[in-house]
Length: 424
Image 1 (cartoon, rainbow, N blue to C red):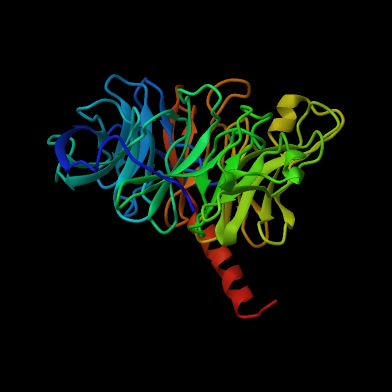
Image 2: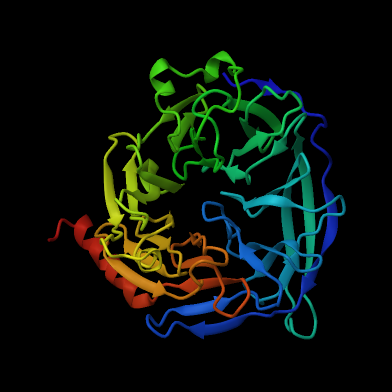
């Protein structure tokens, strides 16, 4: 049973405050190769970035897309899909970070210092946003405050909408290693899931399964973070000590025991995992005999241990790092309906792979210059129709949304229907 901790403050009363609304600055264009619609949510000279690829960027009703901005008074911001206006989520008590939209319900969660808050935006749309702004009010509720340490990951919600997960480091006790916590959203109750001061160590990337409310994954570290063992529920078996340096770990919140779900071979690249349907973990990686990296998109069935290549990478003896990078993948995320997996590469190309057949479709390309700039970190909307990613196509970093062409969706739908009906 997880240990419940007393928080430094009880759940605070709701607080209401207005949010700044900025006029639209979006730009729409079409990818010249695929014909996909590209909507740049931001075009300001400052850098704007989408949320990390395994977080929820869209609110549940898709009325707002969350992102972060380096502009003055930026920080956490949102794009109003109905008008194109931008919302600045500036809290009177300080800046917000580590944000994610709720898995269920139309709120978002964020970190302010050691405090975890829920914000429900109330939007009154303007009929003419270019001349008169919409109005947005934040209804903020403090869930809890960490008694020690600092959040080291973004918040991530459970699929049933009941809990948040967060990784915490920076404790006053220098011998204490990282801890994964869960937060009861309704009650504001903070509980330890497990401590990671012994193997597997800790590399962040804490995220809840998109289909199972009991499973949290995290990236293991290269070495133990400390010499002090966690509580008994977080102990690891002797066999687990042989997994030092392994990337893919899953912990069941009911027993707090981390489990290495994929044991990589020596020298094998395993990186940037994310949950997909039916408790499958997507990740990128492979093995190549030279520095030109081979990196497929792979899916791992958590129960059978079966791994299949969904999106093939490529390696050849003469490959330069730049040329190889165009045909290999670095981040991958799957649509919630199971029909698609999107992956990005170091050149800023976004490839879609059909979930059942693995057929590739190049959605859009050229959103990064190899060797510099942020990666796209491609992720999905709620309906499996659009992806959001960071793009340098306009110069500086902007947030871009690409819509899957309708013929592609229709073709995949026919495949799904045919398989469902037993057709060949």
